[in-house]
Image (cartoon, rainbow, N blue to C red):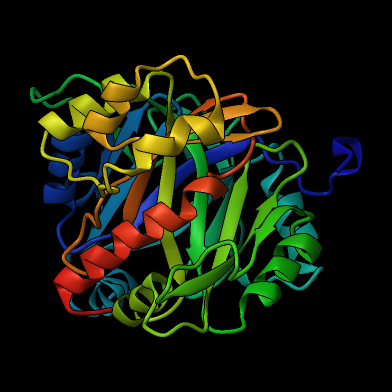
Length: 366
């Protein structure tokens, strides 16, 4: 897409906000396990009466963990229905009002109209629209703001800090939607937000003996935002997408892929902090170099850690997926290192799905 005619120019992911049962404990977990750094806080001490939010950062990634202080708030209802999950995928823009106007006139349902919040550090304009399930996009215009996060937040400087783990930025975020809904949401991103389809996978690409799914990857004009959209496909047994939809209570963000420049070091560090990853059979590594050719990394290190490799016309990528990080088998993370490749690891789908099915068997949900 020609970015000069892009009616919704996006600079990148501004933040990802999770509605959780206990924001204080979630923040501690992401500091300890993933190496996120404390950035900002809002709660009773800052004048909020109904919620508490902790903001963590690493590289360009900002995660917000928000929990309710009252029983009947939208935050509490979201956490009750979905478990801990992503509510807001915030997008950094130059003009939040225009972003809202352009998307709502094309059919987006408004989440909230453009508003300006101010404090001693300047002002931020935000607006929001609904997307699949209970998930929303918030447009954030922050060029006239130099505070720690947003107006209403104070800098959060606890004594407790952990070293970072090398996570740099959000590479992509995957949404799971219901049966036969993928094309509806593909059209939403195309028509309402001006995205184009980067790649698609059907049930022949993403299937095993037992389960299948369909996926299409949508990207914005400059390629900084990539949203794969998954839907279930017919199979002999219940796929991971069906399992997610059942336990999450509808459509939502399935996983966030975070980029690193040294996946071996990052994964070693994460494993030492207690992060659990999916493992593929050791036989995967017997033939992987036949498929992907020469790589810079030591194959034994990749095998030891369970890191997958795939190649496309422009290079190769290395990727690995965590187990779900909640009690419900819903949200998980991908760690990815791109060495030229623009794709999403199609060559790994079968091995990955078989690994997920082993987890489903253990959970009794296949």
